[in-house]
Image 1 (cartoon, helix red, strand yellow):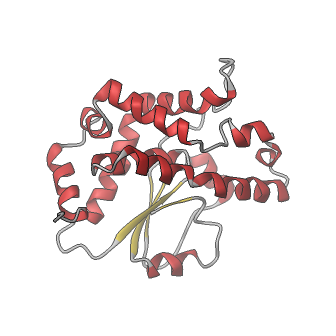
Image 2 (spheres, rainbow, N blue to C red):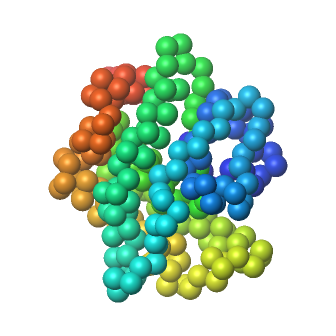
Length: 219
């Protein structure tokens, strides 16, 4: 289950336990955790799996068109931090593919669309989920992003001052075209999400194990 800032809601722990979650992956960097806090709840293991360096720059000086900027950032992230994603991927496999498994995994960043969106795309892609389903899942984030910006604005956070262009087209957006281009890049460079994961160190046996427990045979 992918999410945004799970540490904010007072009832998060109970809701996660009701879903059967036994492990939460926090994909934020250490600075974000220090500033905003972390999830602490009984019965759930919280692991820190930062997938970006604190110095990663979302708003660069490359003068990319707003509609192209986020896709460029995703490619930079996947190129620069493959080991971070494979570590998080392995942490998911440890739970969902464990013998006699009884629990699920949730993972979150701040907004719940970029870092979690990429990890979700890799997970779903490795399971053979069609591109259009992955894209649709990612694009659902757009509905929540406006709420996130409003929440940040109410606290006077600088990110609450983002422009309509950033929300609609830029780094705060969750446009289907952004994920379409990301999946196409993965296919061009690695043959797809599975190829990216294997090239980054995930074993084929781990992927087979993941598929064996999460996929239901068709008729």
